[in-house]
Amino acid sequence: MANTTSAKKATRKIARRTAINKARRSRVRTYVRNVEEAIAAGDKSAAEAALKAAQPELQRAATKGVLHRNTASRKVSRLAQRVKTIGA
Image 1 (tube, rainbow, N blue to C red):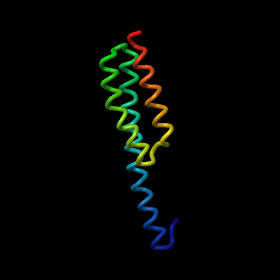
Image 2: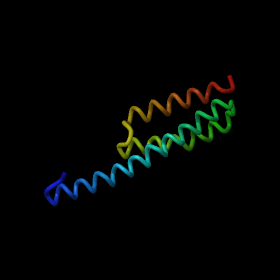
Image 3: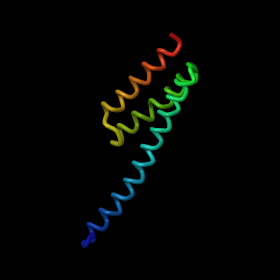
Image 4: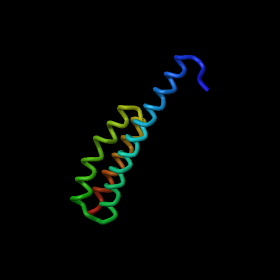
């Protein structure tokens, strides 16, 4: 348990940041899931639209420190590759 005033404040800050990061991570997962569902359905136009919406969300998560930069880039790259192969 935090004893000092500064430790109590740090605990409050950590709780606030955790809640924000949790919401961001959840939003990213939702966008990625939308892309994967469109890919599974075989709907190329919907998958491209979903990818276009998911890409900035992934990059924003990387900027905010929720995801590592390389992780976000890798996810975007792999999703784009899968969307590209739908019609082929």
